[in-house]
Length: 227
Image (cartoon, rainbow, N blue to C red):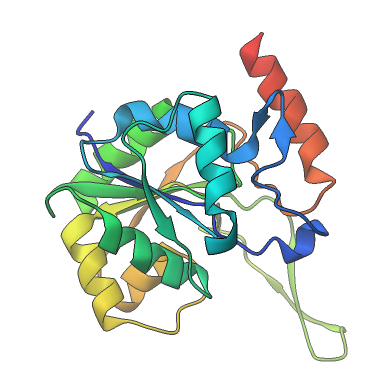
């Protein structure tokens, strides 16, 4: 694998989770963010492993990383008001050169694997950007403000996108320098800057913890993986 820089975004507010830090919550014996850190850290280039966390919880995150022996090489950065601000802070914290690619996983997706990262890195080196996703299979409807259906939307060529998202590091830095106000994902910033990104189909589960009810199923999948 062409070793990427890696910025693990772990600075979300978790408002929809219902209180407490979802990333410090233990699943299968480890805090949620530790699963991502253990999975991806072996691929990171020297000086290129950043974990972005809330300022008020940095000591707790550091202590957890030390407890599970995965703190070596980690550069800690403080999150911002929006996800895009956290990514900017992560980019600024990198201590590696500006060549190659950077992977940006959400720590709230603890099922991420090196195999997926490898596929994304290869595609990003070809195109300039690559994101994992699954084809949309549900029927889609567009409604008016009153909730009445106005049209059925074709799902052809539509994807549900995940992380990690992988980009040419120079292009991503340029995109963030030029574009502001994007509140979707890093691929959205790249698109707005005119840089191409590809979708890589990921058939494996890569669920995100958004609500507290999500933890039970993800814990079951993590347990299955470790048996």
